[in-house]
Length: 135
Image (cartoon, rainbow, N blue to C red; front, side, top):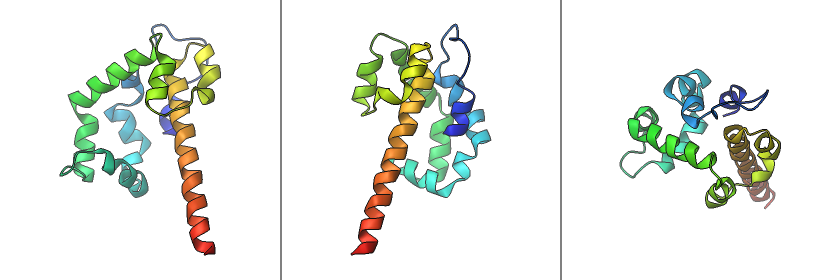
């Protein structure tokens, strides 16, 4: 995810806003090698429909027109007056991307919020693993 974010940040506000479809597309996902990371794939598979929780279906989903359409709708919502509501509905904190948001970089702000949530979940997973080892 950090590799995908690298192309989204920096500089003056973009006109028009950078849509998620330019950050998370088949070429970017392939270049990031995220689908070659077994741990990343295993974290993504539970988000697919039952019966489609395979690496092959994950690749197909990420390349599908339906996924691109969903990203376009999410991107549109992120660049609306409802930014904070969108993040709240996704369980994300806007704090991580506050500076990017002030620059008008809503996509970058969103990705920073996602990265923060992922890091927090990894931290709690590590803490739970450590607690289990101490018992």
